[in-house]
Amino acid sequence: MTKRTSAKYKIDRRMGENIWGRAKSPVNRREYGPGQHGQRRKNKLSDFGTQLRAKQKLKGYYGDLTEKQFRRIYAEAERVKGDTGENLVGLLERRLDAVVYRAKFVPTIFAARQFVNHGHVTVNGQRVNIASYRVKEGDVIAVRDRSKQLAIVLEAVGLAERDVPDYLEVDTNKLTATFVRTPALGDVPYAVVMEPNLVVEYYAKN
Picture 1 (cartoon, rainbow, N blue to C red):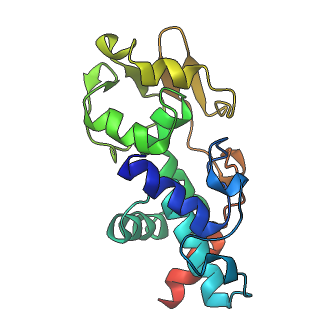
Picture 2: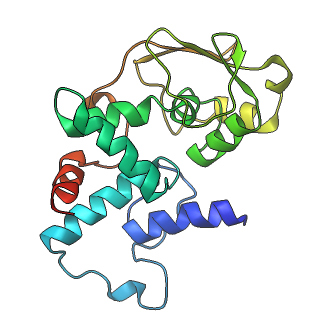
């Protein structure tokens, strides 16, 4: 198991939830956290613990972003007019690696970040290799021609475990995706319940 795969499953086990809805998640077999004391961690969480958990789950979902990265996105969500929690989800879903994952060009969000970093993706015909690049409505994201036959792409396109959301228009033959609109929380096909309102509460107090 690679270090990245190990880290990915560790997040699942720490949260006690299969946060990406993947068939291989260890949580499908056991629902306790990692480590020798994992089975004893079912105590009721405090308000702070619940808020922290909501933040760690959302942060982990998008490839285990660093606290600095996540805090910066949150600060921007706070500045924008409207509901901060909804804004936060919208900004996270506009990350290029998130769009590549949602479009099913690759099987995992971790693979999406690496796929972008390695230069396999274009936005409006221009190669972009920054996973945190923020797409805009109307942008066309595509897999480069020379990358379309990569095993990771062929595997992802055939995955039945998740659907493409309706804020993307995806052509699976051409491997292109148009970002139609910024989604609201209810539009995003999370495999588990995400609570950005608790993330807002967490940062309001910390």
